[in-house]
Image (cartoon, rainbow over all chains, first blue to last red; front, top):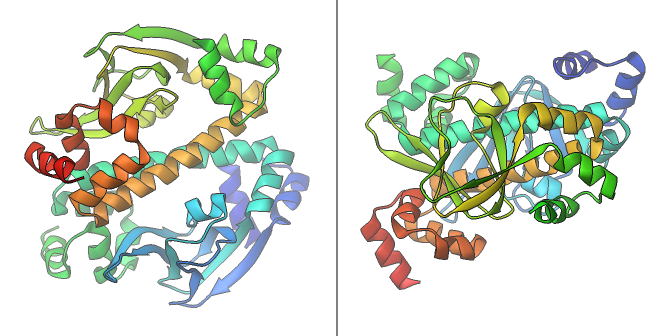
Amino acid sequence: MQEVLRAHLEQIIPLTDEEFTFIESHFILKKYKKHQFLIQEGMPVKYVYFVVSGLLKLIHTDDTGKQQIISFAMEDWWESDYQAFYTQTEATFSLDCIEDSVVLGLSLESYQTLCEHLPKMEHFFLQKANRGYMALQRRLLSLMTSQAKERYQQLIHQYPTLVQRVPKTLLASYLGVSRETLSRLSFGV
Amino acid sequence: MQEVLRAHLEQIIPLTDEEFTFIESHFILKKYKKHQFLIQEGMPVKYVYFVVSGLLKLIHTDDTGKQQIISFAMEDWWESDYQAFYTQTEATFSLDCIEDSVVLGLSLESYQTLCEHLPKMEHFFLQKANRGYMALQRRLLSLMTSQAKERYQQLIHQYPTLVQRVPKTLLASYLGVSRETLSRLSFGV
């Protein structure tokens, strides 16, 4: 499991064995079954998660009980309710498993320790944060400008594996279209 | 001008005079008139900008010529076409002045130099990147879930000064509503 994390980190920062031993000692390995929750709305958020295997969804439930999918997370992705995690407040999102998942959790204290003791890790997290910001900005723009068909095509182009693994109902919710519209779109591609 | 930057940085990282002298030597002061462009779609993006004074808008123009407002930036905010800046590719957004503006520009080379030589600066940028990500996530959620009226009220609550300074037509575009709808909303608040 840890080798997956190491390979992922080393895409950005080369590490010595000693450094990696220090890093991995701060992560906690957790296994979840499909439908299990890692984060629940209204509860404290203890960890940011690195996904070793599996597939998860970050969702928000509005006042009427309707769910919006904020994002998906699969192998090599990081996910959490970041607002609640960084500010140590209650979750406004939920994170649960679409598939059985194995994750490595990092607490805020450990995140800060890693950044303080290993400037490389601060560099790594800065790179990831910048990339995350850019991806989110593209998603925002796509929601503001594109028709459902374009949004679907962009998603296939960017994340082909994801589109195959995510149930169509969830994909429709992520794209902000009805299940029926999505069927028409995916048939036409 | 530089004191504004120093006060801003010191909200997150305390600095010695020597450190700040090193930092400020990497920024370039620029002044722009209302309607002038700092970034133009299709052109290289040389700087990320810290706004000393003024008000700017980051916009995207779609294939039909319609403009979407991605974000506003005023005093103490950072703005750029980050995708183009970090990857040194051509801009897909434009950044121009709603009011006369004074900014401090930081090139990618200088950004990297500051991060390498002063771990504090990497820490600063990580904090800002995380906060930027959270703000963008709230904006995304707001676009996905809220009615125009709620979006307007959230904006007033979060950025009261901004709402007063931005022309109504631009505010309507940012909120994704017509100018007429916005008039009804702002009358009712």
